[in-house]
Amino acid sequence: MWVTELVVDAPGNEPVLTIEPQGRPHVLFSYGGSTAIHVTKQAGSWKSTFVTDANGIALELLVDSAGNLHALLDRSQNPKIVYATLPANSTHWNVTPFT
Image (cartoon, rainbow, N blue to C red):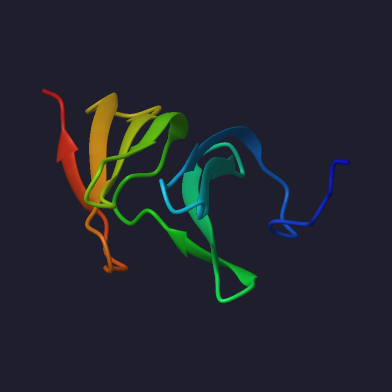
């Protein structure tokens, strides 16, 4: 049986999903057409954070074996493509533009 739950109460589009080996889900989506938001389930509730300095539409979201998140974002301004990482147990995204 499928179970449905509200991840975040905000309009958004282009969601991408990845799940850690331990089962914790992560969602990255575009809010307002330009701001990337990361949402994850922690202690039974969904928590959201902005991917700072990396506004854009989420193209891909992956988690590695150490629990680090890796995202590829498409932006409307230059640099057009950025690579963002969120180290495990951190709340700050690191952003690297492709030039």
